[in-house]
Length: 145
Image (cartoon, rainbow, N blue to C red; front, side, top):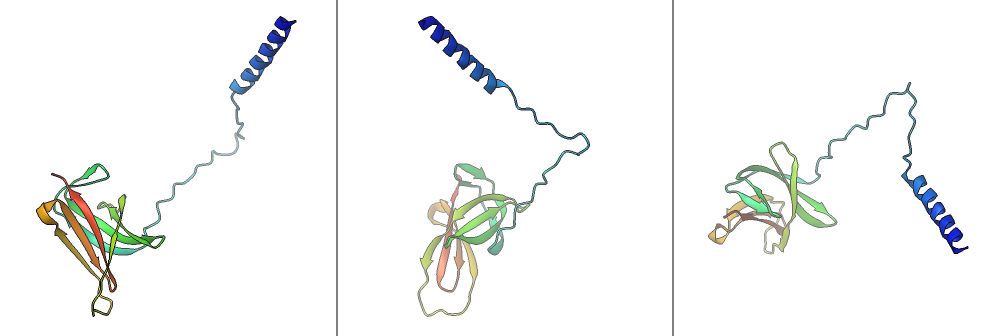
């Protein structure tokens, strides 16, 4: 009796496994051409275009090395947090980097907007500093040694 129950259970499991292994074949009407999905180019990044910025030396971001040269930067905001979008010469996205925000106090007024670039002490970092009416937005890029 136990052998019969065991063999019946084994047969049911085998049938269930065979049902799973069968591939589902999709039948397409031969008169209809295959549908091709067009890839949409990525939407342009919304933000303040900082134009071309020259990185005078190779730098490292997230473990990846980038050569010295011209890069296009865009200052964008996501969820209230500003960040730098770094693109190559073909305007392809390379990476995004959060901006450090520092309050800019003083008696300055108006809508001054200025982008400054300089090396930090010992040329360890290259800094991008965006001056806006109420704050400084800073991006630091590690120089390859």
